[in-house]
Image 1: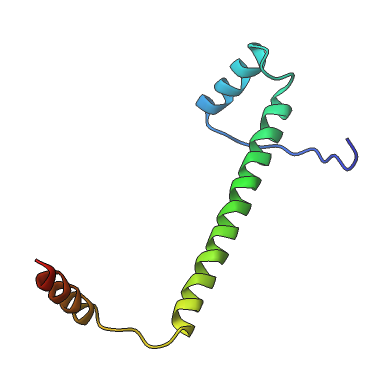
Image 2: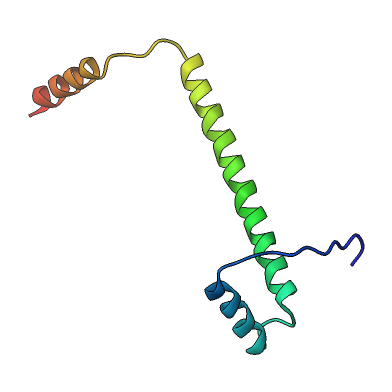
Length: 87
């Protein structure tokens, strides 16, 4: 692995035990492998959250740029009148 850097991490005993059991059970070859996969998953989730936030900000901006809004009560009054006319 090019560019490998050794780090020391601290975690609660319960997580350390789960990590050891996972490796002992044969799911992973080493604790480092488990931690690397967890970090890759975390990075993917973090990137997805950032993209979602950017999309939300863009949608809010588009809404604000689309012109003035209407008071909600005005909209609901119009809808009530339409449905009352159909009934």
